[in-house]
Every structure is written in C-alpha cells, then in structure tokens.
Amino acid sequence: MCRSPVSPPVHNSDQFTGESVDETTLYIVTSGGRRIPAHAKVLASASPVLESIIDSLQNRRSSGKTIPIVGVPCDAVEAFVSFLYSNRCNEEEMEKFGIHLLALAHVYMVPDLKTRCTKGLIQRLTIENVVDVLQLARLCDAPDLHLKCMKLISNRFKSVEETEGWKFLQNNDPYLELEILKFIDDVESRRKSTRKHLQEQSLYFQLSEAMDCLHHICTEGCTGVRPYDKQPISKNRAPCTRFSTCEGLQHSIYHFANCKKRVNGGCVRCKRMWQLFKLHSSICESPDSTCKVPLCRQFKTRGQHVKSKKEEARWELLVEKVVAAKAISSLSLPKIKVEQEEQPRSLREAINCHVSVAC
Image (cartoon, rainbow, N blue to C red):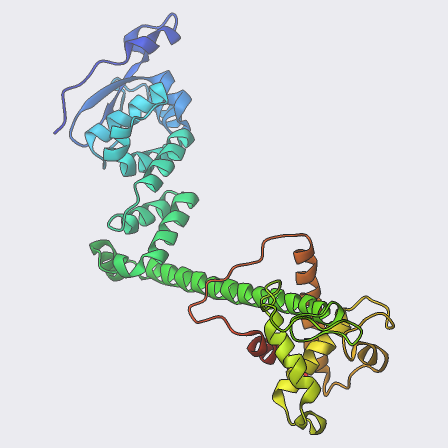
C-alpha cells in the first residue's frame, strides 16, 4: 500500500546555493499515486535519462513538474530515488526489490545501481526464481547475471524443469528455451571433451612412468629381472614400490624373453612389449652403446616398418605426448588425477587402445 507524499531530502539542499526548494523540487509519481519529491539537479546528475526528461519539462515550461515511474511497487521507486541521493542500497531493499531496482537501473541508465543489483541477485538465485531472473537479465543486458542463471539451470536442469517458471517459459518463449537447451548441450560437450583430455593426459603420464620403470629395470635391475652384468637380487626381496608398473613390466619382460609364439608374431602380449621397447627407443637420448634397454639400438638404426602414414602419424603423436608428460614429471608437477566412473584401465589396455602399430 502506498504511503503519503514525503518531503525531499533536506541534507542535499545545500548543493543548490541560491535556489529555493520550490525551484529545485519536482515530483516522481508512482503507480499507486504516491508523489515523491526530489531535486531536479540530483536526478539529472545521477541519470542521463532523467536529465533528458527534466530538460523536456523545462522546455515546455510546465507548471506541474512530475515524472511518472510506473510498473513497479511504490516502495521500489522510493528505494530507487534514495539510491540516486545516497548511492547506497541496503540488504532489505535488495531482498525485496532487487528485480525491480535492476529494471529501473537499466531503464534510467544508473550503472552503479545496476552493478549492485546484479551482484545481489546472483547471491539470491534459487531454483524457483532462476528462470524469471534469466528473462530479466536478457531484457536488462546483464551478462554476468545471465551467465550465472544459465549455469545454474544447466547444473540443476531436472529440478528447474519442475518449476512454474520453466513451464511458463515453454509456453511463451520458445526461443529462450532453445537457447537454454543449446547452452546445456554445449556445456555437456565441453565436459566430455575435458574428461577425454584428462584421461588421455593420465595415459601419457602412465606411459612416461612405464618408460622410466623400463629404464630402471634394464639398468639397475629389480626383484625378478636384471641386466646380465648385475648380481642376482635376493628372492626374498619384496616387490618394487618405486613404480606402480614395475612388477607387471618385469613379468612382461620375462615372458617376452621366453615366449615361443613371438617368433611367428602370434603373441599379443609380446607385441605390446615390443611396442614399449619401440616407444623407449623413440624417446631415448642415451648413446646407442650405453643404453641397456633391449632392442633400443636396433630400433634407432633400422627403424620399424609402418603399414601406413596414418599409423606413423599416430605413433609420432603418441611419442610427442609421452615426451611432454615426461618433461612435466621431471619438473615435479603433480600428476593429473582423473575421476573415472569405471575402474582405471591397466597399462596393457591403454597401450593396446592408443598404439596400433604392428610389430
């Protein structure tokens, strides 16, 4: 319910030296008929739109200087005028009239109030009001508020679908509905792309660790496998914990050395081990005579026949990614942790998935 007219703020009247209150006062009329007195110069200095309206009133030499501000609650208009004087807006006013104040700030071009309303509405976004606030953000050209609304709808879409605001939107604004659905689809696509990228990065770090582990086994020796010039290690020694792939690689090397199917190219396990040796030779920087990893010198001197340019390009890309992961590891940066819905793939499965070069 609208209150009776109030007096203009007296504490600002000293700004207008030589002018009486009657000469500097006009009235803002609200929807409920409330007349809010205000100083013309204060309004004109705070809003270019109000300045234009005041100039038009003076040009017409109108005796009744009134400016109608309708379509919003009377108290919201009074809070708006109060902000023009004090440049302050309390939390209670923001809670009650935040949406209306944003509309007024946009219409009358008051950027400070618009910024504060945007921040206040972002803090007060809920599932129930997000659709209404989104529509207002579009009309009032508030990109930050618009983006926050879209993100909330995207993250809680199933809950938003149940609200009255969404049902009203479906019936009355199909273009905005399409924009929201497209935004959700883009967000999901980016999430999938990010997950895929992180999974690939995790794989490259695993392969980089496998290369270090292979060098460790073939140079220093470990629990079950050692170079020919190293003394045997005690059989009672616990499995190596330096690398997570060490024990598995030792079993694969032992199998590779004793497998009879490997000669005819019929052992899948040996093919994967062969690919690891080839990957090592591709990134190995040691002189041929000093590297103790099997087949390293042979791969460097003779190379490996590749069936197609596509496979060769894939192999070169894999080598490049593993080298990059190795460089990051050498800088002691934390490894990328990926939360996967399924159990992590083993190193053997990863190599089989990303490397398709025939032995």
